[in-house]
Length: 366
Ligand SMILES: *Cc1c(COP(=O)(O)O)cnc(C)c1O
Image (cartoon, rainbow, N blue to C red; front, side, top):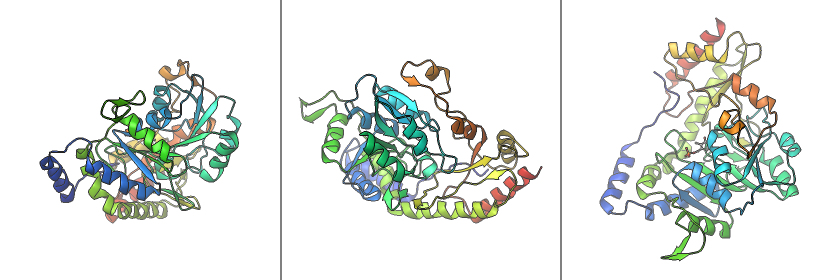
């Protein structure tokens, strides 16, 4: 079976974890600090603040914005549910603008049309490892006085015109097990702003500046040194892992070129794609459906994944939610019914890639 993701840790990780166990410092300590420093360098920000997961990173980034009831966060409907859950947990109202089929991310023109008096935060998601169009979204945010919180959970090391995804506003990353970089569960917030970084550090530790000196209502959002031990050895070779993903993506693009009914994902000009997912789109007139393609691949022992099957607001619990504003997003709705991700991870061999190409081609011919 060629799985959609592969999780394996080398001896360096085993040694680092063992070292942490023996050190006696297992909760937040010096290894979390080292991971923060190395991660800030990867993204290109002055600060990185580690937290216990990616959802928490989004919640904390919103909590330091002092949002008032009724304040809105404008985001994409084509995302993992954590994006929406974080907005609601932070007490804000969620509104959605449609995506572009070219990069699966927020369409700046659609976003512009949905900014209103209550909009306070613009929250693009850098889906599948490719940055949203920050060249258009940042001026939009500036014009309307919006804070930018980037959901970069899938985009560690991605770039837009040479700048790191997560370095434009507050960057929120996930280190969940299947992400490009992992601590099993974990997250990180990146920022250039000293005061924001300081607030986040206090917030994550019960709002406590020094022992029993409480400055704000806080939480326990801390990462542990045990978690950081998993990621530290990965940091050293991370961009090599990305290079392997990029090679696999290119081989898939070459191998699947000109298949009738298939639209291939592309790295847009000026963007450094880290290929968290390689996501096919079935054309409207494709000979088979997305679900048929998935079943035919499974029959050939090729794993695939649907990320995501519906617009994120299109569930009863959100449709009935008083703080979820639902307006049409036709591109997202259509893409959600036609997308299928196939394996692109760094553990694939050249033979695996050939097998995937042959299986997809065979499935689409029938
Ligand atoms: C994984 C993910 C998250 C949440 O991260 P967790 O670490 O699982 O909490 C948020 N947004 C997106 C787009 C994700 O893919």
